[in-house]
Image (spheres, rainbow, N blue to C red):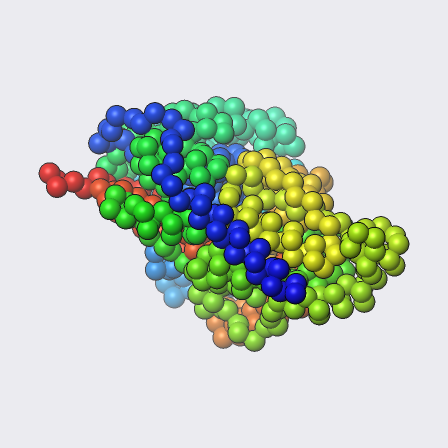
Length: 569
């Protein structure tokens, strides 16, 4: 009976979503007069900050892709490629080498050369001074950067001249080309702000107080206006040294409700909906059926892992039997098939089958409410009054809070499925959602959620598991809330495997370690896997050159390839 109730619920939610997305919608703003050299992009989240190394948020990465260039990226073929440097370092070319360290261990020396043409938007050259300053900010214990531990790995930086430098690491690292290629900060603008008080730097940085300063950026565009929660305006950067972009101006508008975002596309208030932060796959499928004559919908499978992150400070969720029971109590196959048409496959761990490190030898959790009930009872949660389980039958109720990004219609529907199916198990689920900039910038980053936070990690191919799984990466007040292990997950074996993976340069031995970690993940469930997302970008037929990557580096990093193509051209 429970299975049929759950199946009916998913079907009803799928039908309700189709009704919401079905008819032509009224626009929330007046159509604009088209400007052939202006592009209006719609996304669903506003960045919590524009600072390149504080907070991890896809909306920030997408926006900064228009105005900055990383040192090294993964390209559309998922290979390392230079953007701000002149060559990818490698052991084969002698620009990277293993070096002995005191005590008998081994580290690495990796050399980089900045593109000598590179300049900040105020005309100041990008130099090794910016490299050293960024390292100093990153390693400061109170700076609040997201990847604090990576900066701590750097023992020293040898500066050879204004463009060439060598980074010395305290260990080996299989991803050595990108580990030290961190996103640079403008030393000539930020040093004085940082040194005044590192503990409050994240709130006083010019990226917060003066985000339109041209010297903060060095990409094809620069930011000229920031209306928080609403839009960001960009204009061509006259100091850009690369290929001139086609569009003179770009406006990125944040419309958190995906139904309203679709309405704005139809009215012309936005020209293009970014796949990275646009309509969910089900809504995009319905949109394509109705508007394929005007728009091109492109689906991009990728390394995007939708999941439920528990807060391990909650004693209920620290019990692995409870976590396993909750996963067994979710009909994820029905969610995938009926809400997403099978385009977003169920996840077993955090590693996507598209990634070469994926292992098919991990434990899986098919929908099994009876097994879930047995695990909950074994954990001491027995049926109580009103159908809600209580500890020992009469103690505290089994009550959990579930949070996600408000306005994301699909996530809110999935929440309803989760709430209903866990209610069938005797779990009282309370839903409390927040706008994305609050949810990511404060609640998740500072671990303020008490039960589960539903969101996605987007990664690059074979991305290090350290950020989300290593115990050193738990955000705390004493480390300025640095780190991405927002669950507060601690397991010495996960730490050991993470450390071993990062220093193993042999590909096949590293594959075996990855398989061990995935098996541990499936047993321990540091997060409850839901599904791997596919992005759906929606563009007008005249917009060409937009190429999604399928990983964490956004399409905006190649914005100079975008252009308007009309019959006259």
